[in-house]
Image (cartoon, rainbow over all chains, first blue to last red; front, top):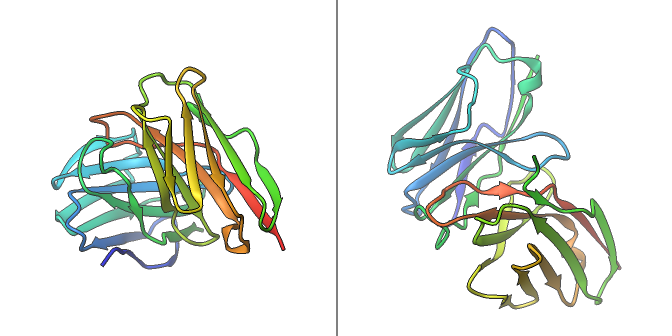
Length: 115
Length: 112
């Protein structure tokens, strides 16, 4: 199993809603990532979890709240988002820290639209 | 500050010919580089990587070249096939850092 599975694939939410994005991998990877990608832009790192602990937060607003319940699951809780937060949210995982094995495997993404 | 740059937003190549995608970086701390391919509405797919101790890595039709003194890398695809049409991102990182910094992407179109 070399897949990273993200649900839902599409999400439309209002600015007062609370929703969660989910990500799952069963490759035994110990690093998991959330990226945000706007149209015609490269993916931008939001958070990294390493061994289930938050290791990198790229100054992401608190309306985005990550959670790593176990080594296979990664959630992104969304609350009071703005229309400019509409983007493709990508989850990724990799074997370990450091470049020797950080070939991150990406999920298909969740297309989020905030209305 | 864009630390990883792909100066060609798009590239068209005839099927069967060589595709060459270029990437430049400014951060001398980067020592590991990766290429990803992305189809619309999908996540990026890892293609090939190279560490700074090498200047070339080959995997089937894909070869990545690294010129550390010029802070430049390139991805060669030969022969190019229609299924290679996608957006290609280069990415860079350094040992001990989990963060990948992506370039701006190049849209490759293979013309049958």
